[in-house]
Structure formats: C-alpha cells, structure tokens
Image (cartoon, rainbow, N blue to C red; front, side, top):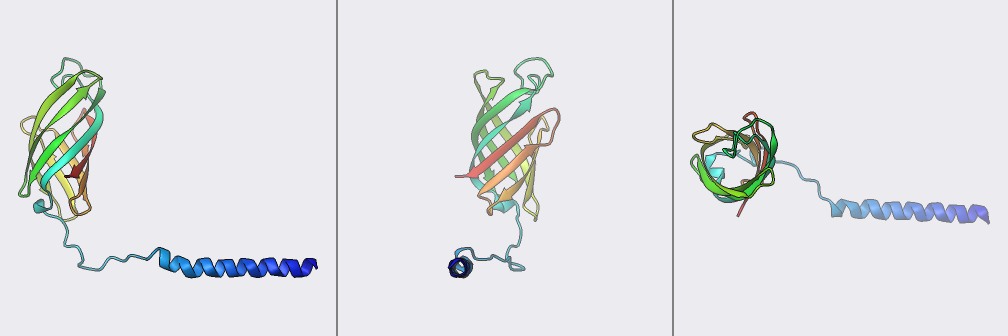
Length: 158
C-alpha cells in the first residue's frame, strides 16, 4: 500500500511539474534586442517638461545660505524644461538642513551621448551633473559630479 501511495505522489508531482513548465512559457516571454532596433539618444531625446526630485548633501557656502564647509542635508523638487537642442532651464524649491524652502533657478547647456548618458553644467557656478536617460526620455537618473556636493536626482517627463 505504501508503495502505491508513493507512486501516486510521484506521479502527481510529475504532472504538476509538467503543467507548470508548459504554462510558464506563456507567462513570461523572452525579450531579445534586435540589432539596429535603437539608434541611440541625441539632445532631441530630451524635450519638454520634467519634474525633478533630488536629495543629498552640500555646504552652506556652496548654496549661498551661510558660511561653512560642513556637509549638511539638501533636498528639493521642481520643474526643468529641456529644449531638445542642448539647453535646460527651470525652477525648484530646496530645503537646506531642514530650513525653510528657498527658490532657485537653474540654467545649463546639456549634452546627450549616443549611449543615452547626459551631462550638464550649471551656469555660472560650474556645478556639474551626469546621468542616464531611461525609457527613451521618460526618465533621467542623475548625480552631482562637482565637489563638495553629493546629490542624486530623479527627473520624470510630464
């Protein structure tokens, strides 16, 4: 009797495994990139309004909010507009070290590489950002490249 029950459990397990294997092929389709499917990115990939949220650390002196070189929390949100030919501008409100919101304006030239990386340098202070474009321009992940700041930002197309 034990032998028959054991064989029935083994048979049931094999049937269940076969069902899972057969249906899983239809649940998750493999995706393969086609050569030449994406021609890469250009400055025109970034065109329109992007909501931005950022956080990191900066010094009071770097943000014009006082003297001192100790790195303190800095975060904010705003709106940036890319013109599609290499210029970005916008406004955002930032909080520095938990203080009240301070409005800032931003203007910079930007350059997009064919591998969908992007770089921009704020005028006139030379504060640089580098990032990567995701989803054909739907989102940009960026990080500050200029000392002493440590800043990460997420930009999403409106």
